[in-house]
Image (cartoon, rainbow, N blue to C red; front, top):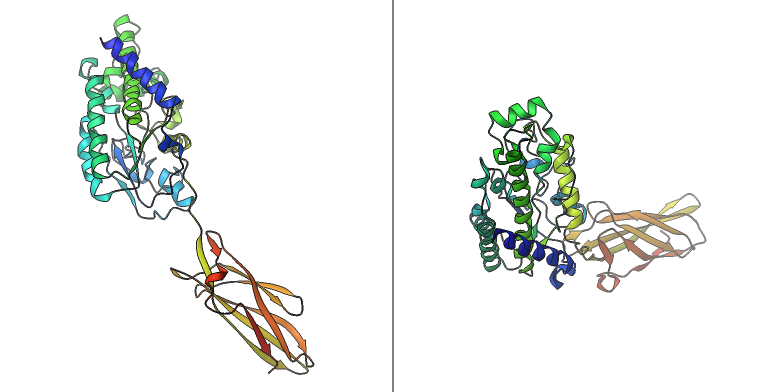
Length: 381
């Protein structure tokens, strides 16, 4: 029975990976808010030097550390208006049975984007017998997804596979201090007990944990595929090789480097977000004046650029003088900047200035929305 269940879950995971939903295939707009649920990995426990202590600033999902470059920071860099909307609702020590409760804390936020990484504590128990049954694990995850979908149907969910915890044993089984830490802190004894033993019972126990890891990820893929708003990482994180430098001083949780790798791998396998549409901007003011000097004069023109949010700074305004000269300036925080014609002879009685272009990253020049004329004539003073 257990073998048939494992095979069916594995097939479901393969199908979910090979046949992504239509909703997942479309590029969603950049989110304005995000949240994270999960366990100590998403809390970045032990990554800031104090073993066991949460360090959410280093979280792969919602963290603010530039070294980690979390999903939150990557979204900001992509142009998402998400600043300050990075809510971490994960709880160290949580199991899949706790996910419904975490989701309920997320519902009032109604985030556009939610990351889920849960299951490590269902694997890492004192004994193999204490690991969560795969069917129970699946039902618990399904209940959490149903709760989220009912309470926040527009939230895009990204489910990250549980890392291959077997790698921890393989990385550090020969490290005396790691073995001391694992035993004294009672860390993941279902996998890490008797780490140097080659007895068949210990070999079988470790393999049982790894197969349960695989079964949990298959369950995540299967449940996720049933919800149009959910995307699974296709086991990208599970298949990632972590090095000793990616693990913190407790020989269990990801270090800052490990969090950075987790962020990069999961980001690459996740949503492809549609770029933010440019905001319209327009010419809201254009005025000129002349300044006389001995035997000549100079014309200057000041342009002001605005958007729905107010003055636009950092916009490049290009002005064509009727003399054939093109000049440009960059708007200040007031939204204004000025250009000069250069010295004009006294026989020149007037000069024309025309705004021919306005450009700024994230904006588009909507000339039809100009609230002032884009061409002016400046008379000699």
